[in-house]
Length: 256
Ligand SMILES: Cc1cc2nc3c(=O)[nH]c(=O)nc-3n(C[C@H](O)[C@H](O)[C@H](O)COP(=O)(O)OP(=O)(O)OC[C@H]3O[C@@H](n4cnc5c(N)ncnc54)[C@H](O)[C@@H]3O)c2cc1C
Ligand code: FES
Image 1 (cartoon, rainbow, N blue to C red):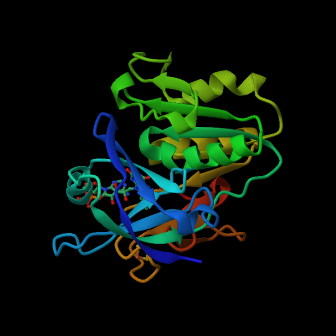
Image 2: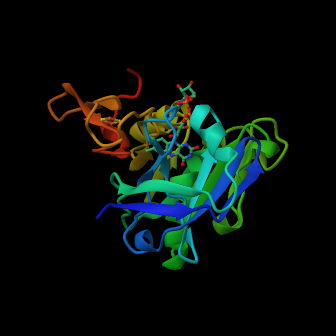
């Protein structure tokens, strides 16, 4: 069940280039939120009328973690807010990853780490072995924080971990990964397109979390529609905020 919460910021810390870790008391969400779900943050400010969606990046001591990148108006404003500032949020929203019995492989591009950090936390609590690959452009862009443990790292310029991107690292690990495995991925859509193509080619299951631009975040404006394939080879649309943000990679048409 989703709830509105007024939550005072407990931490709002720069952890990588333009990337912040926000910690909010959210006792009401700890037992109900599932990995892949998100919250809408509202701002008591006429310039920021629409809420902004952020994946739940996990929980620590009844506090919810949010990992966010400063990209525009609201995230810039958010990054200036001091400890104690009250934020209005609504959540948990959307669907979640469907975790099967296959070996879990988590692929995270930049702040796409957020929903996978939560999934990783749950898998660790269940003592399930898994692989988490985190990629970014440079070492300064890697959103590292203690709750994610020690992921496999890859940077495009080779300044930390393997040189290349998340898909390069995954391709290298592929022959030695325990089979069958399921990939759970979040990051730039180019990365998600590439992993879906690979999954189609090599026949492994993939679930992706999409971070499309949203307006209402509640299924009212149709602003976050994504094209999907249907059983009879025609196409249709689903809403990222209501039907997602997690989709079976095989049903998505991300090229259009
Ligand atoms: C389900 C969901 C979960 C998300 N989880 C996270 C998260 O955990 N961490 C995080 O940092 N971000 C996340 N996002 C993206 C986040 O909501 C946007 O970055 C944020 O709304 C930008 O607000 P802004 O006012 O700063 O940017 P604006 O001023 O509104 O826009 C600035 C620029 O960013 C672009 N932009 C805005 N939103 C997005 C987007 N979703 N994807 C790509 N470009 C965008 C705009 O086109 C514009 O060019 C998520 C989005 C969705 C839909
Ligand atoms: S953002 Fe309005 S319908 Fe999804």
